Structure formats: C-alpha cells, structure tokens
Length: 615
Ligand code: CA
Image (tube, rainbow, N blue to C red; front, side, top):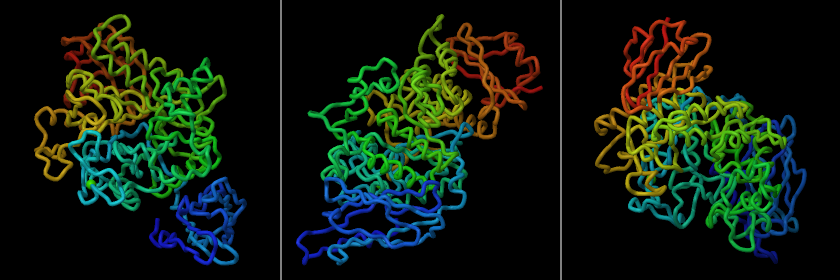
C-alpha cells in the first residue's frame, strides 16, 4: 500500500450534518488491471457510510451495483474494470447533500509482465517450512509495538518470541546453502490477540502484515530477495476462521458474516465428514460451521460478500507480493463449494499456480478427494492442485519404530504408496515427516538420528514435493516438554545474545553437523536430479525388513534401498533385475563412493542407500 493512498483514508467529519460520517477503510486497498475477470467488489467500512452517495469518476472503472446490508457502516461496491482501462488513480467520493464527506484515492496498477504465467512450486522443489516468530529475530525494535496487545516474552512457550521478516531475510543464505528451494512461512498477517497469537492463524487484518513481523513492504521485499536467489515463496492463507480480535468482529457487516450458534460450539474436527458418503447432517454441519477455537470465529463463506472478500484477498497477495504458491490452512473446514470456486478463480487468473491444502486425514482415499480432478462419486471437484500427504506422515511415524511382520514395519511405506491409485496427480502432493502441528520426527523416534535420516531420504526420493520443518537439520526436538510451543522452539542463534548459533558451522555440535551435512548432500544432489524430481516410481514388496524402489526416466535410474532391521544386511539383488540388468555399477550419493558390483549390496541397520545407477 502506498502511503499516499493511506493518507486519504483520513476521515472528514462533517459537523454541520445531523449524522457523523467516517471512512475507515476500503478493501482490497488497491487493484490491478488486466485480470481475466473484470469484476471487483470493494468492501467499504466507516460510520454511516452506507447513507452517503458514492461515486467513482474514472474512464473504464465504474460502479455496477451498490450493495447495502443491514449495518449502515458498510457498503459493498460491485465494480467493473472495462477493456482498455488504464492504470491510474480513481477518486471514490462519498457525498451527503452534495457535500463531499470522504474520499479515497483508489489505485489501479499495472500488473508485472507475465504475472499470470508465474511458475509455481513443484516436485522439482523442496520446501523449508518455518514459523516466523521462532526462526530469527532480525529486529528487536519491533518485538513490542504500540497497539498490539500481546507483548514479547521468550520465557512463555506460547508467547511471542520476537522473530520477524528481517530475521528470515537475514538467513536466506543459510536456507539456500542448505539446499531448500522454496520457503513456506506460517501466517504473517496481523494477529492482534491478547495471547497465543504468535502462530498467526488468528488473523485480525487480512491486508496487513503483523507489525511485530514487519510491514507489507518488507514482505514484498523478502519475496524479491527470495526470487533473486532463484527460490520460491509460499504464503499460508486461512479462510476458515479469523481471530476474535478482527476489526470487523465488533461491527459485523451482517449477522451471517460468521457462523453463529446458540452457545459456543466447536468444530468436531472430523474432516472426513466433508467427504464421507455416509456422514450424518449433524456431524457434517458441526464440522463445517463449528468454531475452530473460542478465539477463532468461523467465517461463513456462503455469504457472497465473505466469499468475494476471501477470494480477492488471496489474489491480492499473490499479485502484491509476487507469490509462487499458497498453502491453505484447514482446507476442508470452510464450505467446500466456495473453496472449489476459489480454486477455479485462482487457476483462471494464474494457470500455473500451485496451491496445497491442509487436508488432515489419514487415508489416501479421503485426502485424494480434495485434489483437483479427483474422480469423486458426488461429482465434487476441489480445484485444489495439491494436498498435504498426511497418510505418508502417519506411515513414516510408525514404519521404523515397529518390528517387521506381515503388515507392520517398513511395509507401511509400501502399502501407503500403493494407494496412490486414489490420487489424480500423485507427483503434486507434499510429503513430510513432520510439521509445525505435530511432534518433531526425532521425538516420535526416540531421538534415533538414523531413523530421521531414513525418513528424510524417503521423502526426498519418493514421489511428490518434500517439505522439511525448520530445525530438522540441526536435530531440534520437543524434548521432555509437551505442546506446540516446544515443537516450535526458537532456532538457536536467531536471537541477539543467543549462546549458540546453529546457523554457523562453528555453532553446530558433532551430531548436528552430521545431520546438516546429510541433508545438505541430499538436497544439493536432488536439485539437479530430474529423475528424482519427476521420474517414474516402481517399488518392490518389502522382504525381511528391506524396502527397495527405483526412480527412473528415459535417461537414468536411481535405486533406493532401506534396511529397517537392527543389523546390517547383505542383499542379493537378483530380484531387482528388471532395473539392474541394464546397469553394472553405481554411485552411493550419501558417501560419494563407487559401488563396483551391484549383485550383492551390503546395507547397515536403519539406513537408506541411495544409488545412482551406471552402465
Ligand atoms: Ca523482532
């Protein structure tokens, strides 16, 4: 937002008139010319603004319809941007009895060249997921900001710790050097809540970066810096709920803006009800209309103004910050017809944009329901290109902890992948061992680093788009403490005065260095390995705790073998001859050593062997 435009938001009180009028905000605060859709709906908020006469005088940009709701403090203007409209500043005027009581300079900007054709994140990328409050504090001066009710307190695991956009910008080289190519930052928008607001999922202003993280301009600057490094940026968006401290909560445009209940009613969190063919009406209703939390009012996306508001907000951020992708929080929780319309519109405006939805269910069939073009019996098409692979997360958390049997242990990975038949596009699914909402992988594996390495080897070589949670590379754990606050610990070295700095080689202990190097080797290798990014996958039924699969294309083949046993195994590879008969030797990409003979392979306990096959 340009300050010039903000300046004209200033109210013009009109003492001579019997009523007080104010203009507090117009959203979206600006727009662009050249979108496929010529339509734009402006939310206008201010005291008695609906009782004024509104006009716009700008060639090609005109009011199609003025919508007034019960609350006189809102106007919704249906605008049209006609063909040939030029960029510039349109003056929106509000009059009472021929006197101008408020005006707003509405900027229509030119879109950046090729904005619509932007290339998004894909299976060629690896996502580094981080929480801005917990990654690095680049600017201690913004830890506490006047007007923001919650103050910084690093001693409170559920409090704000002061991390910010500058902290991320200061460590882009670290992320690039590690080898990730895409950054997913959990929500940065304002969360002006009295407590537990550091996570960002209680948005109180959909058009403003939380000042404790920085400014809108800083966010756009971060995006630019990320792009200069050849990396990509994913924004975490939240349509299901807002924060109870949202500016509109005390002055709702209409009673049905949020889903109200006679008494506080939580969602049942059973996302399956949104796709279960046998779901009862009461369960489905409570899932979708129940509140996520007492501090997270459930937005009613069936209200057409809410729907437009959210869709335009999503587009606004893609265009404003030059985003490469979106992660949608709690994707099945909003009304799913609206979510489908959102996806459709996004792909009309940005055909290559990738959007990954958090569809947290444990079975591939139910997750697959939410991926674009799934053959759903009810005809539903989400228009959501990508989903988060919770079934693989679940399988990975069990596979290396269980003893081997007919249906346990490493077979979990084989079994879950065999259910890819449900997905319309398995290569566009985000695979992960953990994230910000679940125990860190090491915690679920009794701190066994070998198992973490196996899990990372798996997500980086199987199909899909790998995601790595910040701190994994330096063995961050939740430890004996419990709860989200500890899963999301501060990255050591991110705060001025930290006694250890794990961002630097010298600041990492031996185990951390070993883990960092392991991941670094894999990530740097994967960057140039088209066969792992986009190649086909074939796997062999696990036998005796050994799971083997191949990634292949017309040019090359990579073999991955995992040993889930407690002892070293030597494997006769005859069984894999449909791949190995074309190859004589290989390169162990972790150790960098040549394997002169592929007939017998020796693999240590709890290890993944990754071999580039050679003729
Ligand atoms: Ca800060």
